[in-house]
Image (cartoon, rainbow, N blue to C red; front, side, top):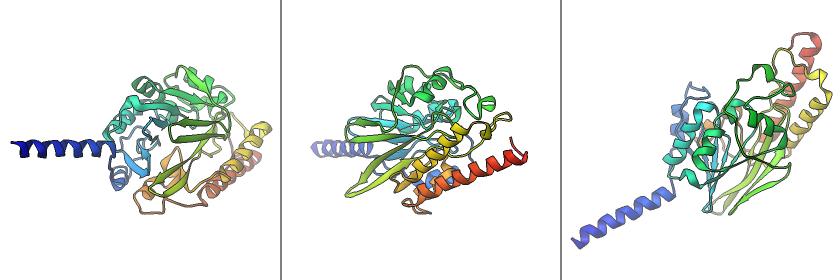
Length: 295
């Protein structure tokens, strides 16, 4: 009997240890999302590196960065994805109540729509840069956003704390720094941090979207200050500490293939190339406005 009890106790301890150190199969994520990129298409969670996990959908990124003192969630995806993200966090073995901060890349419904649900589910503090806060609180933007007339409303977020450009969010050993990168949206924010796996530490950059798109009325050429800020943002992204690039839309950085090991996860030039894609797109858009083919 004592032997049986000892075996059971050992099994329970092993199960507890596995829960504290969750293991996931990154290749499963790539397989599950093959040919599926909808904002609300469910995806299994996946381990990226060290204390970084993908908990989003097939079409929209949400990241969990963990520590013994609590966790940070980046982005809430679209409204219907909030419960999917919460479930993925729990599938990994983490408690929702241990998520202490929710951060945002930009104030569009496909990335902020699930934040209200996740705020209620976790009790976490939501942090955002000042230009994003009013939109997050209303659940819809204004004419300052190039895409204003075509963006769907999303559940409004309460009790948002403002964070400044260059400010660092600290939680235990975690330190995530906000970088103002307006352009795709006025409140665009990129985030950087370091994560380690054993003795190997990497610089992570969650760089905001860089596409210059708009509704049918907005012309970038009519907003020279905004274009200048957009160009400055692309320079900022190019200069980020960036061993590993992550993006709000996973296909923007070939993320699933990279975390599955089918392409290099680490690429020191990735942020520079990503920024150049944004520059090329912005210049193409300005030329299209000049020749009358856009908006």
